[in-house]
Length: 451
Image 1 (cartoon, rainbow, N blue to C red):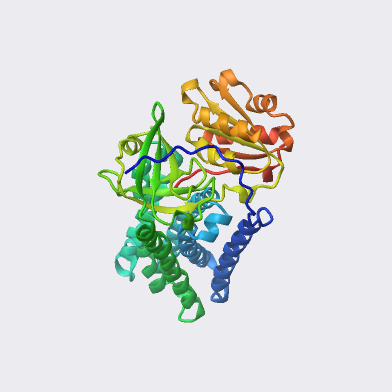
Image 2 (image 1 turned 90 degrees about the vertical axis):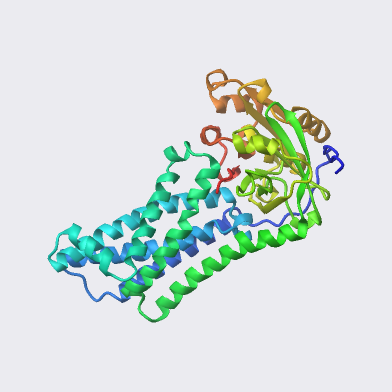
């Protein structure tokens, strides 16, 4: 196959982008989730005539936490179901943060449910807590499966903890995280069999709708849609080009690429159909605006997977999920824009730098000169657009206070809208520095790509 021509810096393309007031859709989604939780509590309230004694209070607490945990589980899966409206209007990064935070609360609810329900039943039956627990697990319907589901959920929570996550490769963590689906499925039968609050009326029907609807949406958006798009677009590797030591750009070609409706700043999850890569769907940002004939992704050597990507041959088939992410021109509100990135976080900013309207300044943070990416390309885009490009080199000690360094490079920093992408530590430091410099929270847009 012929090599793909290198992308040329183009004049900014000012396309009308549908916009909503900032935060409208995220606020509506949170309100809907909260309304569902209140509806679950209403189910318990209507089914509870009175609560008295320690056993009654403990059992009541077990019922409440069990209902809330049962409600939270499918909601967490829905947040990561790749539903286009959520991915486009809420953003993958925010959804991932909600999912992670909700996951921690769900684990706590499950633990509280197990402890309080066993303790409450033990007081009622006059048994010890341990013997009551054994009785419940082995003699109540669906409880063996529910116990296995609980263990699977707790195990997923452990590998999702930040300390454990740092020690696992993305691929290992990703596959272990899929155990969540098994945990939810194992717990569903227990909720119907022993959940007295669900009864046989509307509450039970609503529970079926919630769980089966979640399964249908996951099956459609995470399995069927990628398969259908794979059949329609037939993506394959056209070229792998070395950009710098340890950095390559992968050009994908295929059929009807404009129909993907990808936007600068978005990302895809790519499964390269090559040995060792076909079962891993890793997220990669577009590093250039989408072209009618090809898509470009830039990959930095961060481990075995990225090294294998650098060795791909033209013609390798690629299965793609996406485009995903709200880190796009849809967020744009202000005339002055700062694009701040480091490491592979510079890739979506590279695409936005070419297309985002306004007065743009791009600052790339790097420890060493050899770590700087897209140097010549960014300079060419800046010259064509009349924009500014700066590189902030050195260790934290050498750079000093990030806010002071940015203010030196970017006049009127507080009046800028900021697109921020990079390692988590840098992103958190940058947010603190920007807030201290007077940039309003609603003007700071950041996205990291996980799950």
